[in-house]
Image 1 (tube, rainbow, N blue to C red):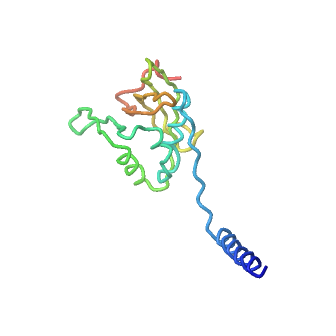
Image 2 (cartoon, rainbow, N blue to C red):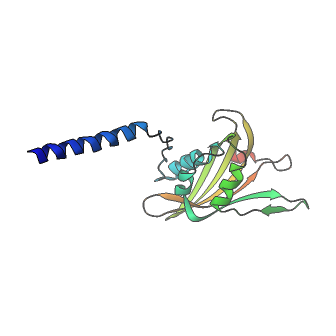
Image 3 (cartoon, rainbow, N blue to C red):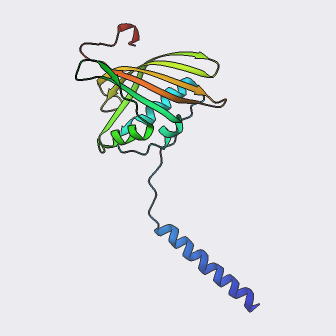
Length: 176
């Protein structure tokens, strides 16, 4: 009997200490839920959410949407006037964006044209960059997104993009 009471007292003490430890532990920062990507429409929405927000946000969802060896490739005008691709790994892109600190931006796909065969897709997407989700477009351009479906969901293999310039405006046919 004494042994049983001793075991109950020890268990109560352990549980009480564990409960106090949980109550005193700092709350973990909320992790943004990743949107599904079972359809191409969902992929586009999930990609926009994963890219958008504070520059220093957690990029777990972005990594989940991209293939491990994915490339993100901005194309820009070089000093000599030529246009040059700048291939980035996912980590390269995240580091470049983090340099902006906590400043937020929101990428919104305003028109998407998908081409699909089997498990591969090409998405020609007109994007706008905004300071707030519903704000005025600050920059716009075209994304060329290549995606693959693994049988359960779509993932991005590569994104090429070029921002609009005064010399090269996004053609009307690609605008909403």
